[in-house]
Image (cartoon, rainbow over all chains, first blue to last red; front, side, top):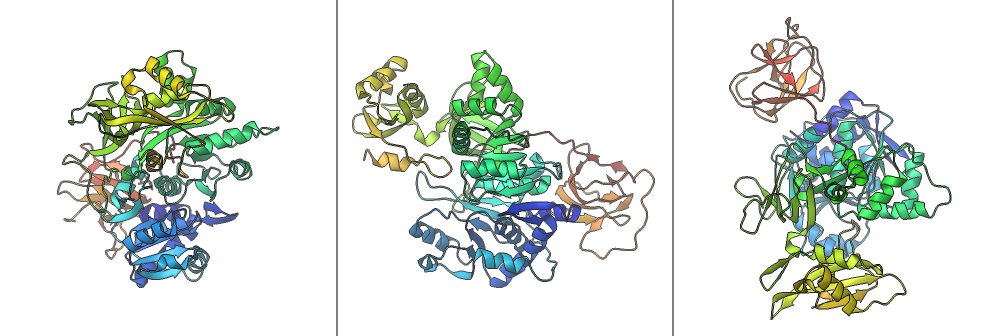
Length: 497
Length: 102
């Protein structure tokens, strides 16, 4: 089945219902479907093998996504924040391409085989006007629907591929068709080149929930759109929620956000104090923590609203700590924790998270990372408690091996962050002749305070043990995060090399 | 129909029902309203009527499965007929309630 079928069903069932609000303009399911068919015809006629949107969110995003699906070519959204030479590399990797962009950097397109170059506005004018045409959609199924370049926080971006069958399985398994009322609206702030941006389009369209796009996140606009567009659902990354909470804190008249019913978050580790603040500030909102990866077509585990309330109000430390968990696997996926030798670990034992299920692609253009039984090693480290709740403890690649001992940076970071004057911290391993790897840390202090390195080292020695003590600690003004709130580890590592 | 496989779109010959094959194993054909469904691309014969016992209707967006879970169809267009394998009606797959996560 083709992902475009999801749109076709919505368009045939509720052609007049508003699917999308973008910069104040409404688009119905009928309009988007008809535009996607026109786009598909143009993609096919151009002779392209990829369709790419290099721009912020707009109506062009769902139209190009579904249009590419109908035409049977992969849709590849590109990150408009990348530097010109990085983009140039990626464009060469997706040639010949039909490129939709408002980016006027001409040097970008040198070297790439561009079958057609269209500005976003011109593309939209073209597909939204003229006669309707009917095009038979490509088969879908095993062919590639979406290709996403990973963020490359640890190295060169990899081309993750999601087949139609992966995305369709995810949607059919987790979304009820047209379950939303016409009044519901989903505020989408994640960038279109992120898996959460893709799944937001597919889920919302299939659920019949209007999407309200916020192309460039700001907490002021987020709150304003929640109120003016009667937003009922929203997905945020942790940094967005903390900026919203900070913004609201500073307002004299607090917004009630009465229409807001559900907020899902994911894409990075949510600080416990932020989610606690949010639970207090918005008791009427259902919070869901969604854990997923590009390679798994988005969400594979959720900590649902009841879990949040139970954990937050519980005195039992085992239950309370679940506020920091990513919840339980979706019914359609299996999750296992394995050690380095591949043995499946018992409850509360940390190892690498493996996942299997029809929505799991686990594939890159260069290779299939799944094993023979269909298990995908996520490279995320974590453990599962007695009741089946999954906890993340960092990236498996981040584990420091010092003198044969495996050390998780997360446990040391937690100790450092417990210091009153430490606002952020990151621990990593650097090559060491003596130990193989040695432990080092970068620490961000609150403005205007001084802390002795020896005091921080003593804290770690007291709370953990001497092998965990960072040999070097550097103070920095801030840590480098990308726009999704992911630490750019290679930049930090470079400070020590 | 002999070559039923996932991704094939079927239509009813007695009503408006259309369905995508999600999962299929076996060699029995799929019926709607008591009459064998055909490839949605095929020329439609003149519409018949749904037989008694096969006329509860098919709902768009619902997934229909057999008792052994060997086949699954997604109804993509609603109609008056009910889908079956031989005389055995397919049943609606119960939806799990998950909070919207994206």
